[in-house]
Image (cartoon, rainbow, N blue to C red):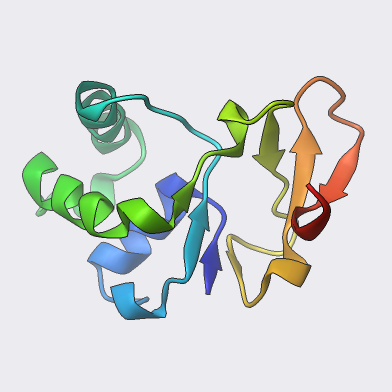
Length: 115
């Protein structure tokens, strides 16, 4: 499975709806450059949209993200920058289902395999 949303996929994994072994890749729209920024991002989501994760500490969430680190792609940092354009939910079964949006031209859509 390919996840297309950090804020939606991480909770699914933590709550056991998707096992970490099922995840082939996470293509995320948010970005971070170091652990401090990642912790800041996790804290932000915990305070805004991850109320269902209140039983999980920042450290537990960070540990899951670290386990997935080699599977995470951040197309916002590519040249040219892209974002996932997930029209059919935030989990895809294959790369053929993944569409990216050009940040400079949001009307432009690119299949992941062609990016």
